[in-house]
Length: 90
Length: 90
Figure (cartoon, each protein chain N blue to C red):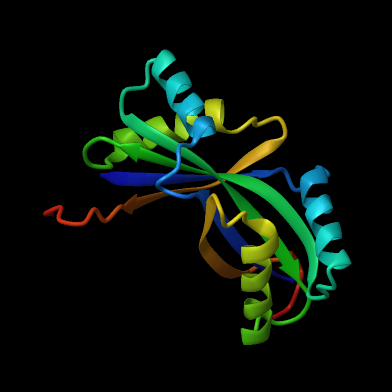
C-alpha cells in the first residue's frame, strides 16, 4: 500500500528548545562539525488505493489542520512513496 | 550553510501509540483514506563547511548514537541538502 510522508518543522523564526538541547549534547560529546540542530516530525500515512490528486489534497488538508500546529510549525514536505511489500504484485 | 536531514522512525515491529492516536483522531473527524499513521522525528543539522565523506560518517554515528534510540527506532534516511541563503554566492 502506498505511503505518504508528511514532514513538519518548527517555524524558522521561532526558537526550538529541543533542537538547542540536542546541539548542546553534541557539543558536550565533542562533535565540532554541527553548528545548529532543529527537531521536527515525520509522519508516515498509509493510504488505501492509489495516490491521486484527491488523496493528496486530503492529506494536505490533514497536514495543515491536524498534523502541524501552523501557529508554530510549517509543513515542509508531502511526498508520496510506493511502499514495497514483499510478494505484492503491481 | 549545508543542512543534513536525519529521519528517524519507530521500528516497524513495534506499536506506535502516538501514531495510533493520530489515526484515531483522523477517523473521528471523518477521514477515510488514511489506514495507518506512524510518527517519527526529522532532524535538521546545520554543518560548517562542505559535506564530505568524513562529515557524513560523523553524522551517521551521531544519528545512531544520539538522535535515534536504536532499541526502538531506526534511522531511515540521511540526506544532505544545500540550504539556499538569500544573497549567498555559490
